[in-house]
Length: 456
Image (cartoon, rainbow, N blue to C red; front, side):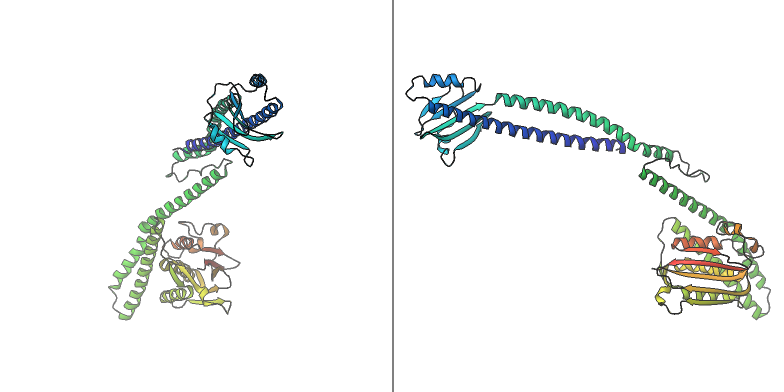
């Protein structure tokens, strides 16, 4: 069912149900009021008749005729019966109404229980015990409230008409409101239906509505669209890198291995072979990282474990010293006294290692003094901050804005070989770990990469 029809149905049913219950309650309250008012009239009628009856002489032969004349205009449809203290009938009106259960009613009437109310069908019955001028009387009135029932019938018909009118108005209002409420959703659905997800140049959906939920939904869709495009672009660029740029270093490795076959010096052969092994492992690690990221982008959950970050960095330094044995990495902790548990982070070991390997490998490639400094700042409560500092050729402010983009290489990398994936992969890996990486150039030839990793 469409949201519009659902709103129309729910709103109409709810309002009409509330209206119906309200009208029924009013009708029932009026029915109870009518009955109570009519019984009160009957009691007053009996009391007045008994008072009048006590004023008449009992020996009056015309008492029946006198009472009939006095009461002929009181009720159209009533039988009134008066009994003495011995429960002998003294007077009965002439109305042709079935007599009630007189013995039962008289037995119920006492000085302690002077009033009895009951009914037979549409007839209300009131019995009264009273004492007047030393005499005891019993009176029973059985009457039909024709005027009251006529009013109730009119009220019922009026309420039915009111309910039908309100129901019609509610349906019309519901139709208008449901159309107005769902209009932004309908427009958004139409735009989504005609939106071309394959068009990388297509603009984001316009957010030209005042409805908060639709605005938020549009923003979330645009955010999802942006992330989807980034994922598509990353996969596209990854495939491009693997198919075009990685084949060059592979070809170089193959060429170097073929050249090794001509080596005769055993020591030189071992050193060159070790270098090729390191290069092949590095290349294999990048391919594994690309595959891991592709799996995560495809929806698989990232597999994480607890890693001590400084130990991992020491392992990377040892690996890089095989390629660049003269390069020096100085690692410092801040502050001097800290809880070593703050060095433990939850991360994917393959991905996070490759990210730091890329950063430290850049130091060996771009530093001009074969030295880099690594600062582990454990002074922050919710994160560990790692700064990697080296001196060498810096990039311009314009290049700094593009350094994490695909295919970008700064002027300082003109003569530096690489796989063309370093910083792009590094930034992506840190994003998957909810970490941030920033670059700064405080002046001169100083380059600083700062990584902020949240603590588990």
